[in-house]
Image (cartoon, rainbow, N blue to C red; front, side, top):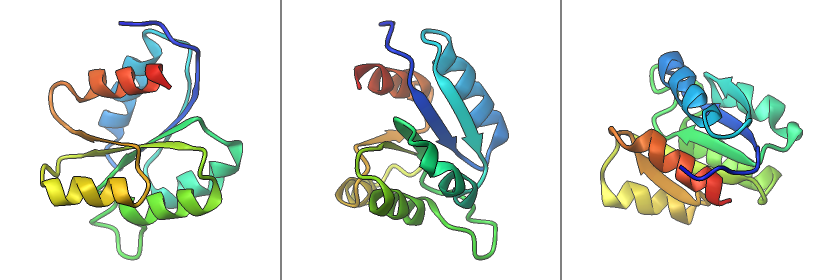
Length: 127
């Protein structure tokens, strides 16, 4: 894997095991500064730290009443800072959903499968 300049990365997913595993994977090849959040609200409260990249779960907090979902968080990030790179991460494989996230401002859409961590790392390293 290519080595990259360390970046400030926010990982936003309501699965703490996934965020920990992805965080560890990204740190293997660069000394990234990574913050993990289980809710979009927690991420948005810290967005003033100006992360380089936000890795955002599409199905964020679907079980939590009145919590922001991934699309809502994406739109909030775009209103706050258009310069933040957003990678949408999802189990959702429907083309229409992927296109919708890209149209709303995500730069990449990665399906959560066995190659997802590698794909995210390649995207982050290319930025």
